[in-house]
Amino acid sequence: MELSIEEVKNEVAARFRLPGEVTLLQPYGNGHINDTFCLTCALGEGKTKRYILQRMNDDIFNSPKELMENVVNVTSFLRKKIIAAGGDPDRETLNVVPAADGGNYLEYKGDFFRMYIFIEGATCFEQVKQPEDFYNSAVSFGNFQKLLADYPADTLHETIVNFHNTVSRFRDFKKAVEEDVCERAENVREEIQFVLDREPDTHVICDALIQKKIPLRVTHNDTKLNNIMIDNETGKGICVIDLDTVMPGSALYDYGDSIRFGANTGAEDEKNLALISLDLELFDIYTKGYLEGCGGSLTKEEIELLPMGAKLMTFECGMRFLADYLKGDVYFKIHKPEHNLDRCRTQFRLVADMESKWEQMNAIVRKYSK
Ligand code: ADP
Ligand code: GN1
Ligand code: MG
Image 1 (cartoon, rainbow, N blue to C red):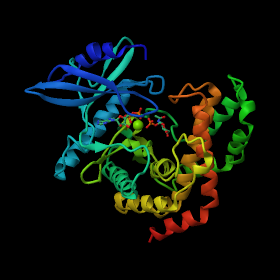
Image 2: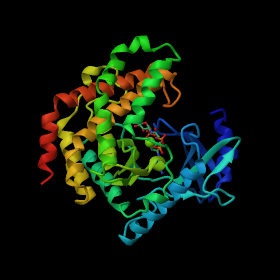
Image 3: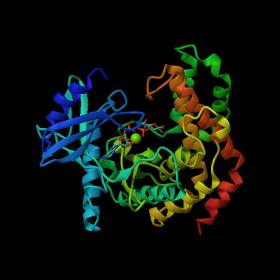
Image 4: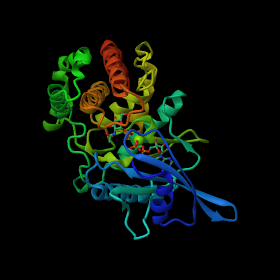
């Protein structure tokens, strides 16, 4: 982004409906997509209130208007349910702060910004520190799925078309290899072959959806651990955030993406691949928590496919990182050279480990499917 922090503070933040002057604004969080800032607003008498300001990534989401319509409609829907259940709607869902002109986002010099109330007293984890946190995140993501079960899916905009369509992701990948715009393919022949060898897998979930063996649901589609806020006192998942990709999808995507990120014994960008493996204990507790959170709503066919959901989401993400590396790092934010390559290698190592633990993964899922 070309805007300076000062400009974001004085020209952008100041154009939202805030209760006082913005005293501090800093870059915040570890997302790969949006530019996120935390700002502090003075309320008088020494009191302050914090907000999250985000520059939406309009290379990736090409209609900020439709994106924000989804976010506002989904959060208003959740808000009503949270109030009905006696919860705290200011902490248990994102809340959009309107711009001074009443809009739910604003444009400044060609960039698009939105603001949320900051959820205080809660933390987003980059890695599982305690198994209970992972279990609690599973219950929350499952519950999120349950809360949106009666949301009218056909009113949602598809903010990224074919987001988790692994077959179409595979096609994009092959195109990136063929075009090889940065002449990087030669360095990563082994990784490319890893993807090509697994082409038949890419069809499994897509076919099951097309053949209506599993239902299309309203899903989050980006359920990594750092997209959930864990309450600092109770340890429970308090709020599901990063709603940019809430769209019709499969519960297998949500379950699988959480396993990909949270049940990995190493970080997503770990260089030492010996540290990467599937932690079966974490796999077990996430499966338990997610099924509990979904409240018995998943079908037998969905449950049977959960291990495949975990493997395919990991595979797809690795393939996306590798395609982005080949294209010259144009999608995911990188913080060092070859960052996307490091990320892709962890994902493929994890896929290979899942393949070697396939029987155990299936046995764990069977344990909870009765
Ligand atoms: P990205 O799409 O780039 O991942 P996110 O919406 O996930 O962007 O936000 C990035 C980070 O900012 C989150 O991981 C979290 O740490 C923090 N964050 C986002 N929204 C809030 C909020 N309402 N309250 C507190 N922290 C937030
Ligand atoms: C991105 O926005 P963030 O950082 O939560 C990406 C996900 C990937 C993830 C990999 C809109 O998620 O699909 O799984 O990075 N989000 C989008 O860490 O592409
Ligand atoms: Mg995020």
